[in-house]
Each structure stands twice: as C-alpha cells, then as structure tokens.
Image 1 (cartoon, helix red, strand yellow):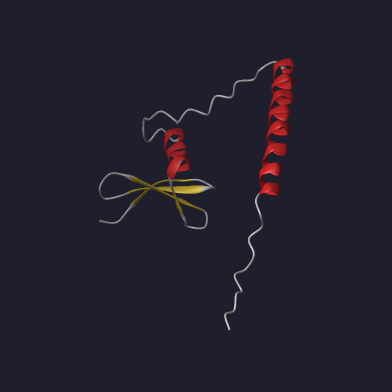
Image 2 (image 1 turned 45 degrees about the vertical axis):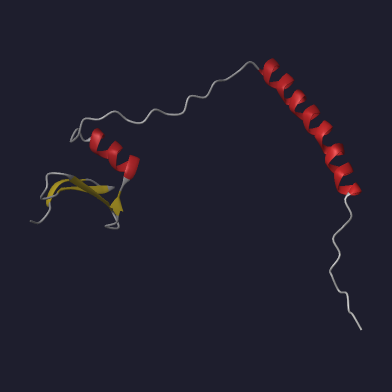
Length: 101
C-alpha cells in the first residue's frame, strides 16, 4: 500500500505508511530518522512519547572549579617526570641487522 501524505510543511513532509507508522522526509526527499523524527512527530501531535532527557550539566561555583583545575594540573605535573624517567632508562630499540659470515 502506498504512503499517504499526512502533513507538509516548508521543512518536511510527514507520511503515514501502510502499517500505520510514520515516515518523515525533508525538503530534499531524504528520510529523517532518530531523535529529530521523534521531535517532529511529537510537535505535530501525531505520536505521544517522552523526549530523551538532555544531559544534566552540574555547574559548580567557579572557586571549586579553579581548585579542581589546579589539582588536575599538579597531578599531571607529577606524572610527567616519572614517565620521562622510564623512557630515559629503557634502551631504544635498534633494528636487528646482524649478518653472519
């Protein structure tokens, strides 16, 4: 069965498929999928669903952030000399070009 045009806007067209699900196509006739399709169908009140929650960003006071940055820099500074010392102690690999005559 062919898809029936349900709604057409300047940005997209919404079709109802033979199995009663919806297809959304953009202006270039490309399929719209995923969260964007869900948001369009919810906005047009064709489906009822909850949108995925936006990731919660906890904003700490700037004083706490500054102290965390300093602590992170100190930890990085402590690790760097140790890594350099290990690299200095380990001999560099040389190509195995031994010829037996």
